[in-house]
Image (cartoon, rainbow, N blue to C red; front, side, top):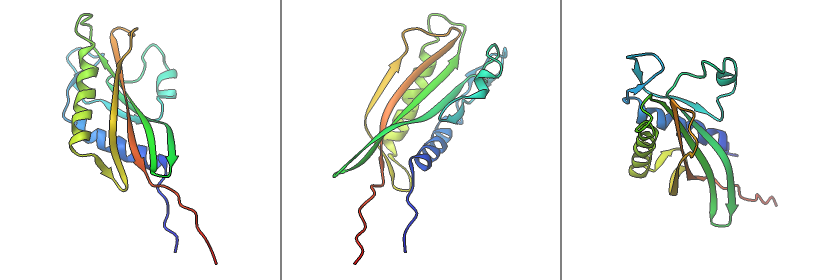
Length: 158
């Protein structure tokens, strides 16, 4: 009997679900005066949500969980994942702090509970990045991390 292997798609969906749990209580600024909400979490790319009406853009704040690549070696398989956070603030001096705070919360929770579901486990190193150029009044920061993946083994038949 062959077990169904979990794929990078499954891992991204599980990680996105975990991140939704981590940020669900956050209340961040939106483009609507006085309205605060938790970030929406997307997998992969924004796609048409962003290009359909570039002036409106997707509802800020948002988070993207994106698979980058993986290394499959004898010791196991590690996938590289990118988490991108976009927040909104008219504060041109401190607006950058919001996406960094969101990333810090995500990092702390993933390190405290690295088993995210199934065979997937978050591993160090985490690499944070605040973009040099920001699309003010939106603020974007990213983080790259590693996640263990099930390794495919050769099957020998007799």
